[in-house]
Length: 189
Image (cartoon, rainbow, N blue to C red; front, side, top):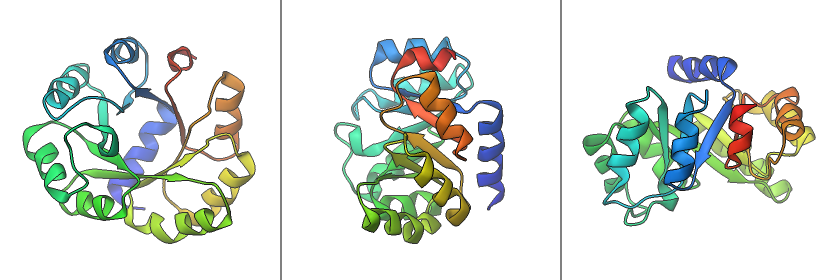
């Protein structure tokens, strides 16, 4: 585990709930919560810097889900833009070439995986080496979380279908370093 990955894992020990925000209202709720990490799942190339600035003014770590931002392409130049023109701490993406490139330019890279079968599980083990942290969906699979935490040695985030405190506690008890969700009530648990 790199120094940057260790620092991130340590932060998640203190603040294991990640606010995944999908609109301005969600951002306001996230900023009023104790969540120290925010995944931005909305915006456009025209307003992403304003969204990031608002969170950074509140001293939050901000990760941009680049696959979901309108106007940002799946090309490396989009990451150059984020690095040079915003205060983003890192990215979230399903695209391995963006994960690799983000790390080369100094952005923290969280690779998101959708686990639907044993083949996708094996892909996590193979591709996790390129990311600083791994985000798996759905996040309500304690048996799979336990297996992965023993094999990938990276901070592991459980996301997707986390709907209540029990889901959060189950994922954390199974070994996830953090849980991420868009249900703002969970950000205040």
